[in-house]
Image (cartoon, rainbow over all chains, first blue to last red; front, side):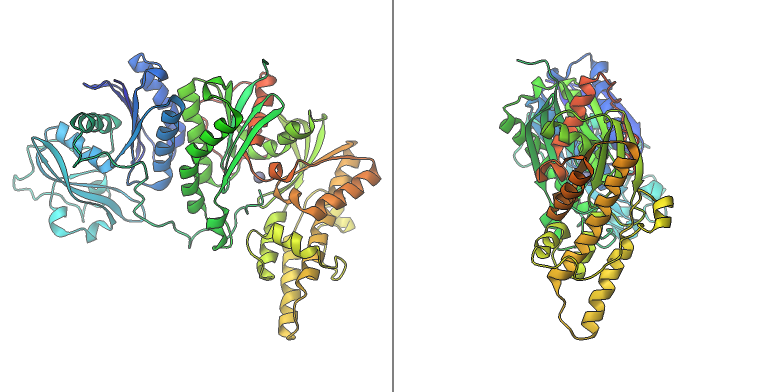
Length: 236
Length: 348
Ligand SMILES: [Zn+2]
């Protein structure tokens, strides 16, 4: 088994290969503006790192967001096309779940808010409960202003870049020792965590916890108001 | 069996998801999925709507192209993709898909200029291009006169529009006349019933002075305004607007300037071939007048069939195949998109 994981829903352009037991290669670039430039070289770098050829890959999992649309689409179309070219199955997973799973792998237990950059002064957010068995998404994903997220969410330990962007609105737990043991929480999605979560869910085959579809989680309708009336018509 | 390069081309610079496959100079398939109907109610292409549609259409369009051409992706020699100019978010979907194919299949990738592709597509329609070729590209996004010594690496701009593209003017005038988007085909149809000398609309940048300073440049914004004002006056006077006559007279003003300058460019540069591409090349009056004036001037006219004039993947594959055949270096896998890629830059 060799699963190619791809996520471009955050600032990280992240690629990983997972052999069913562990992540065997990972390539991550931080660049919020150039997802399409770094992703394919990242896939090639990960393959080289693992000493594998494209035809050794047995499946693809891609983060379906939510995340800023332009970057998100780069990952999804790349995952779909790579899989199609080699006749492989392709799965989608909520990218916020991958952040929660990375926190879980790092030893975090208990409640967790994942809040990532949604641009336009908003965050994508979901609430999780992490226990020994793994993660459960209790609510979300939603898109919202950080200050408008429900109060008890904002007092949870928080993964994602939300607290870095909106420290006043997303302070996390109070300084009274309820923060679990200073375990660092991830800020950007790692494709390694994404692939690991996919491998576990596929192994479980738990019908109550299926892999998500392959459609991007936009959570917003297209903005047609700001669109130029016709930068270029359909005349070609 | 043949050793001509088999190239798949992907085009997503606007609202058409195009995938074409070319072997050497032979077109095997040209598959296009368009999101035009989703944009019609907004009166123009909405970038986010186009990007979403590209994502959904990409794999199905590649799949359909391969099936219809009877080609397996494994047989491809190279992937070509439009890397600019165009809508940034749309370009990214196509370029990302092309790169994924290139990595998965371990094939070279060529990121190519959309405008050069509009020129190269005529190779699969009418054979090799004479060198140099004079090309006029007219569409919703561009109106340019290009001198093309070598479509794979030497494309020179002689002039282009200074404001609206020709197709843009068609869209805007269609709106003024209450015709649906996209305006080109509707104006063309309405104009057939009209009198093209009914109204004397202005011909931009054709005065003697303009022909010195802006010899091969175009301007259609003044024309568009003149049409709008003319229609407004009729409304104000409570008179019916003769849509067919306005459409015919407006269209005549556009194609008169286009063909006059194109023929002039050929004469000035001693070129005896004119190639017309881009969506507006599907306009029946432009074709007719170009034919008439080229014949008179002893210039051979080449216009691809309408389906190859509008944006499509075959044109990208056609240019890619030329690049492979001429031994051009492929692009780097990290190639960027460039929404305002200059026409002189054939490859990124
Ligand atoms: Zn075009």
